[in-house]
Amino acid sequence: MAGLRGFFHPKTATGASSLIPSPPWHYSGDLITVEYRTDPARVAELLPHPLELADEDPGAVAVIWADWQSCSGAKEELLDPVRSQYKEAFVVVRCKYQGKTYSRCVYIWVDKDFAIARGFHQGYPKKLGSIHMTRPHPYGPAPRIESGADFGATLAAADRRLAQAVVTLREPVEHNGFVNGHAMLHHRWLPSVEKGKGLALDELIETSVSSFEAGQPWAAEAELELFDAPTEELARLEVDELIGAYYRQVGVTWDGGTLLEAGASGAE
Image (cartoon, rainbow, N blue to C red; front, side):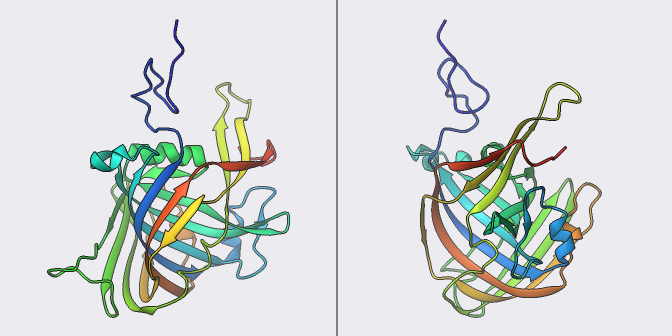
């Protein structure tokens, strides 16, 4: 009997039904980033052992909205847009591990199942959500990417709005923030199927993009609001002080990561 094929579930005789293909995965997208400061204790409570708060600006948080087109190595998904287009909103903090500063995604919502599956493989804690962003366009009433342009972004999950932002582009700058500017430090977790057995998969991994290109980053003025919801805790990362906001178009490729530790998180 021939072996089953497919990078992810469901595995079949041909592998064509796999929810996601094998890496590399390529992404082209528009990003809205809003950075702010919260109580560092609220960041610390999201960092499992052996991670620690970053030494500098430990309460810094970035909320990022992204409108993506993505594909695998063959790029066939770009001609079947339902398989390539999705949006996400994610929340990044910084942490320290063995003296090195990393970025870490602590919350993330996406609007397609294949994006959730990729996130589980990469250690992103993805959930299903409703994400919307103002899109730029050179004609009609849509904003251009220029000084004074206004962009809105919203996030909802389970029928509750969790976050909303309005950014007004101000001027070109050299970078688009610092919170999401390091290699990512994530955990890959999977509970054992046997009760009381803890985690069957418990890995601390480092990942970063294998290639990156980007357009001109724009600094922006921003308004950001977070909202309470019965099954979400984003609002615990209260906005104490806005740091900055940015708009940028990027292209990246992800092609695997590095295992740093196994079985050391103590997570339940």
